[in-house]
Amino acid sequence: MFVKHAEEVEKKPVSAGRDTTIQVLISSEEGPHFAMRKFSMAPGGGMPRHTNTVEHEQYVLRGRARIGIGDAVYEVQAGDVVFIPAGVVHFYENIGEEPFEFLCIVPNQTDEICLVEGD
Image 1 (cartoon, rainbow, N blue to C red):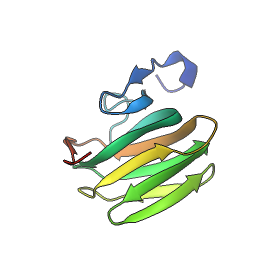
Image 2: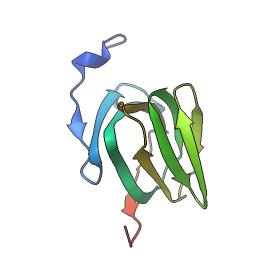
Image 3: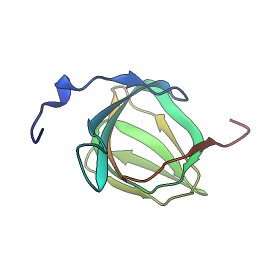
């Protein structure tokens, strides 16, 4: 399928996340090189410190969040672009009054997620 509406794609809870859902908008079966996902975090929601074996390119659609990448912490909002290199520890915390939503594009490679202890 070349065109579909995001509302047609099932929202699934992120198991390690808190009040966070994911939609796989373009899967690895649909796109030969990259997958596109949409994440949504309710106010107070987030994802704990973890690593992935693939890089992330992200575009913030809505809301505000604190994102930790390595040793740095950033506050991001709609319109910001985020790059997370493969293997770098990162986390997300919705710090706004509305949902925090972003697109996340990843290469179609095996992605192993590892939660970082202490969180």
